[in-house]
Amino acid sequence: MTNPTACLLVIGNEVLSGRTQDLNIKFIATRLGEIGIPLREVRIIPDVPETIIGTVNEVRARYDHVFTTGGIGPTHDDITSECISAAFGVPWEKHPEAMARMERHYKPGEFNAARQRMATMPRGATLIDNAISIAPGFTIGNVHVMAGVPRIMQSMFNALAPSLAGGPPIISRAVYAIGLLEGRVADGLRAVQDKHPALDLGSYPFYRATGNGVALVAKGPDATEAEAAIAEVTALIEAMDLTPIPGEPPA
Amino acid sequence: MTNPTACLLVIGNEVLSGRTQDLNIKFIATRLGEIGIPLREVRIIPDVPETIIGTVNEVRARYDHVFTTGGIGPTHDDITSECISAAFGVPWEKHPEAMARMERHYKPGEFNAARQRMATMPRGATLIDNAISIAPGFTIGNVHVMAGVPRIMQSMFNALAPSLAGGPPIISRAVYAIGLLEGRVADGLRAVQDKHPALDLGSYPFYRATGNGVALVAKGPDATEAEAAIAEVTALIEAMDLTPIPGEPPA
Image (cartoon, rainbow over all chains, first blue to last red; front, top):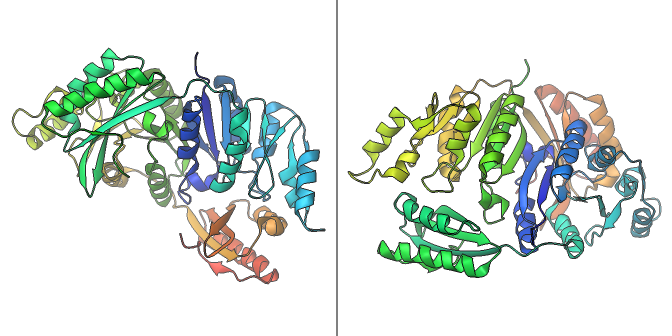
C-alpha cells in the first residue's frame, strides 16, 4: 500500500517577518507520520490573496491532503477562508452549523459582524471542531483549514485526524554516539543506505553541553528492516571504539 | 526604492518528518527584515534531487535572493550542493580555496573523500565563510547555500550579510493589551489598516500565564506612519477601557 501524501501551508506574515516562531510544523509533521500520511512539503506564505489562492490550487492538485494554519480569525488580516473559496470557485457564505455553534457561545449582542466572518466559509465545507474557542475550522475537498494558534490548531487536528485514511505508519529507529564525527562514518553509512534503498537513513550532528555527536535515524514502512539498518550502523560505531546508544539523543 | 525580495529553502527530511524543530527560519527572517530584504516565502522540501533542482530553479527566477539551509555535510544524505550544480547546469567540482582551507584544518590523512565532498561545489561558486567548522557555504548567482546546523548557519549568514545590498529596513511598531479580544477591536483595526495602505497591520492573539490578550503590529518602510497607526490603535484600546502597553508582549 502506498502512503497518501500531505503538504502544509503556513499562512501568515508574522512567521515570514520573524515575529513568530512557528510551532505547528513539527506537531503536524509528527502526527501525520504516525498516521501514515507523510508530509512532503511545507510552504510559508504571506497574507496576500493571489499568493494564497495560487498556492492552494497548485498544491491541492499535487498532494493527497493539504493542511493550512493561520488566517481564520476575525480581523482584517485573516483572509484564508475567503481565499480558499476563491481557489475552489465557490461562494463564501455563512455556514449554518458554524453560525449556530457560535451564536450559542457568545452573549447576546456579542456575536458581531467580525465574529460572524469566522462562521463564513466556502460553500460545501464540513466543520472541524474547535474545543478551545468554538469557531470551527473546515475541510473542503482535500484541503483542511485550521487555526494558527498552536493549542487551537492542535485541538482541530485531533478532531480531524480520525477521519483521515492514512497508510502504514512511518517507522523510525535510531542510534547515536557521543564523539562520533560524520566525516569518519560517512562511507559506512552510505553502504548501509545502499543496502536498504526502501529506507531513509539520515545523519544528524548534534551539539550539546553534555557532548557533541551524531544521531543516525532509519525511517521506512518496515520495522524489521529499520532495525536491521540500525544494527549495521551500531556495528560501525562499535568498530570506531565509540559507544552506540539506542534511540535519539536527549533534547 | 523598492526592497529586493527573498525566498528561503529549508532542505531536509528531518524537518518534514517532525524529528527536528526548525530554528533557522525565524533567525533568517528577522535578519533579512533588518537589512531590507523581506522574506516572501519559505519552502521546506525533502532530500530528493528532482525536488531540490526544480524548486531552486522555480524560486531563483521569482525572487531576488534565495537562501538555502541544510544538506551540505559529508554524508550520503547531503545532496544540496550537487543539486544546485544541476539546477544551474554547471559542473560540480572541487573548489580550490575551499579545498585549501579544509586541508589546513584537518590532520594529515583525515581530509578523506567524504569531507572533500564538502569542498565540492558548482563551478563559479564564491565561498561563504564558516567560522565554526571551516567547511564553507557558497553563493552562485542569486542563491546562497548555507548549513542547517543553526550556529553554523548563523556564522555563515553573518559572513554573507555585509555583501547583500538591501533596501530600506522594514520598521515595526507594536502595542498590546491584556484582556483585549480580536472580535471586539476588529472593525476599528480595519479602519486603521484602510487609512494606512502602505503599512501591514497585523493582529496577533497571545495566551500567557500572565494573561491573554492581543498584540497589534504595524510594519512598513516609514517609521512615522507606523507610529501614527499604532497611536490610532492605542486610542481604540483606551476607548475600550483597557490599558495599552507599547511594544510586543514579553515572551
